[in-house]
Length: 243
Ligand code: BT5
Image (tube, rainbow, N blue to C red):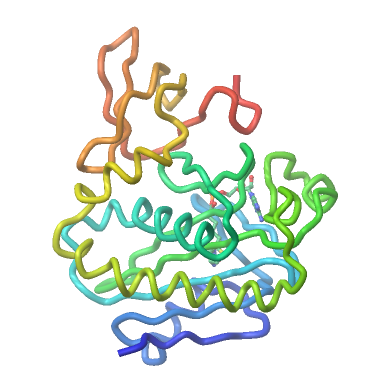
C-alpha cells in the first residue's frame, strides 16, 4: 500500500505536525512543506526557514525497531540516496546525520520518539542562493542551487524529493526494523566524511577509524585509547571551519 504523503503550504514544524496528527499518517506516512515558521534542530537549536526554497519533511512510523538509536543513520542514507537519485548530487554524511555537499551542510535530520513510534524530520536546502546563508549567519550551509545543481522549480523539486524519501523509507524500513544498522554499515561508511579524519568530541580528540555495527563512531584517542561515541557533538577537522 502506498504510504500517505501530505503536502502543506506552510506549517510551524513538520515534526510537530506529524506528532499532532498520527491519525492522518498511519503506521508509515509523511508530511512536507516548503515553509516552516518554527523549524527545530537537535538540542533545542532552530532550523532556518527559506519560504518556498527548501523542503521540510517528516516521516512518522509506528512499529518496533531493533535499534531505534540508529534511526538517524538510516535516515541520512535514505536522504543521501534520494538526493543522488533525483538530482545527481553526491552527499557525504557527517556522523551521525548531517548531509554535506562540497563540504557544507545541505540537510539536517531530527529524529524524535513519540511513545510507540518515531518521527524522522529532514530539512533540505534546495534553491537558496549562497548570499541567503551569508545573510542568515550560516557560513557553513549550502543549497543544491548554491552548490551548482540547478533547481529551476523549487516546489516541483520538493514534491519529487518528498515522494522519493517516502518511497525509500517504505522500501528500507522493514529490514531496518528487523535487523538494525549492521546491514547498512558498509554503505554508511562509504559516505561518512569523518573516517580517517581528526575529530573532537566532548572529553577528547583523535582519529575517526570506523563506524561499528551499533552505529557508534570508533575513534583512536591518543590519551585514552579507543573510544566508541554514540551521543553528543563531534566536530571534524576541516569541516564547518573546525581546526
Ligand atoms: C539538524 O539539527 O540539523 C536537524 C534539522 C532538522 C530540520 C527538519 S525540517 C523538517 C523537520 N521539522 C522540524 O522542525 N525539524 C525537521 P542540528 O544538528 O542541531 O543543527 C542545527 C544547526 O544547523 C543550527 O544551529 C545551525 O548552525 C545550522 N542550521 C540551521 N538552519 C540551517 C539550514 N537551513 N541549513 C544548514 N544549516 C542550518
